[in-house]
Image (cartoon, rainbow, N blue to C red; front, side):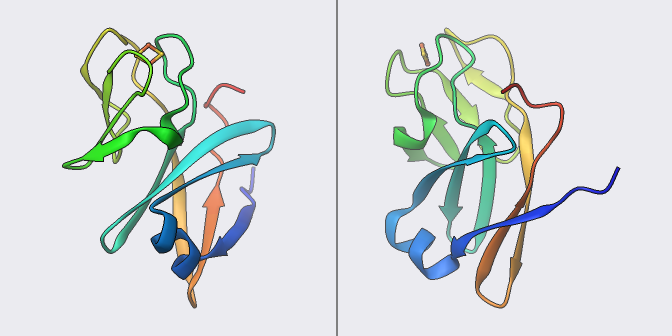
Length: 109
Ligand code: FES
């Protein structure tokens, strides 16, 4: 099945905020700008669904604002609990200053 690349806006706008919450194909996705890299993971923390796009980012990890679970943004791996399940990542492409996301069909809605 061909994945659709959804535009979520300009790279400059994402850089200005550092993170962005988007909803694509019924999935909530947190998008982060880390220097030159743009990464996308599930928005909802796997512990109790805390909003990761509102979390603090430290050394490539996002810290859930509710109970402090930490996830590696590039892989979705849990680095600190209480969360136990790793998060799904989504594919990001940058084309001529515009950010596109290809939704991982295995990510929960
Ligand atoms: S909801 Fe994220 S750590 Fe509890």
